[in-house]
Image (cartoon, rainbow, N blue to C red):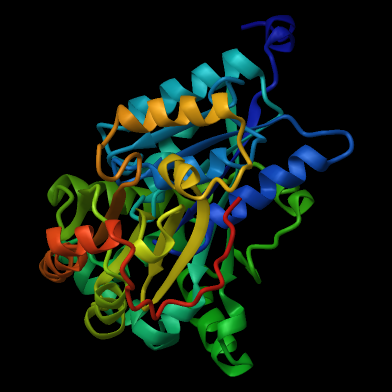
Length: 405
């Protein structure tokens, strides 16, 4: 190809991948980066692709709530039902990238992976995309989880050698792989750690990837300019490591006991039983659960259930249409009320558009057991009738809610 022909090719669009284990703060960060891109002078035309292992695609819904990207604008896509490192979804990722490039010609593309995504297959796939170029593979590491579950990360390095040879994809090996291929590592949730524990976590992570810079994030705050300044990803640096993982995967097709389950019911959670389940039965090996829920005590609110490791946030996300009808207080015009009633009537005659939809990701045995417990937290027929009659329900959950808008 002549130099003149090369000069006519459009420049490759830089891509930043936000990788990291479940609950490390990727969704919060991508929301922040997209908002900064929108407010930047001059404005950065950003696009986003969000991957959620669950078929619910909760992260995709939350990111689209930023109003900065959207499907109609052609600068947003979501891929759900599995991790985008898999052979089944790599072609989907490549296709979505192509569609976004053609539809919106963005200045920069951000990709948020699911928590179970392995980075090396993404590096290879993006290297083969002719219109884009990987400029940052950022690994987010939940420092609080490393402290609580892996002795500040010091348990990871001594165990991954055995796990690598066994062919089993353990949590320790997944976290290590996400760190080892990163161009930059960011420790999150540092506000929950002492300075001494932060140092221990940083040293353990540094041992897994000495060339990578390590930074800290508090409340998901990261300057967009720092991300845009990431150089082109140096694939040569990890080529030997990648070859080792390729050989391992060829010898041991991906195995493991991570499972994804979806709780789907129009019924609400009983507040007290749900609180007891969270405080007494939440297993350490339930690594992530996320979705929407509702309770009789807050029947107008869409609650975003967001659990990572031992912590759960139950935050306000939106209002149910049926809830708005029940608590209108003169805020809607008669024709608006009529339209809402028609929409609600087309869903469920008892619950309207209210629905409990939660995905759980974790090790199979404990996750299935907790799934069964959550099913028992749903209101019975008798309790549904009590809600309809306006009876009181004990609600120990904090009344102050966090807005995810």
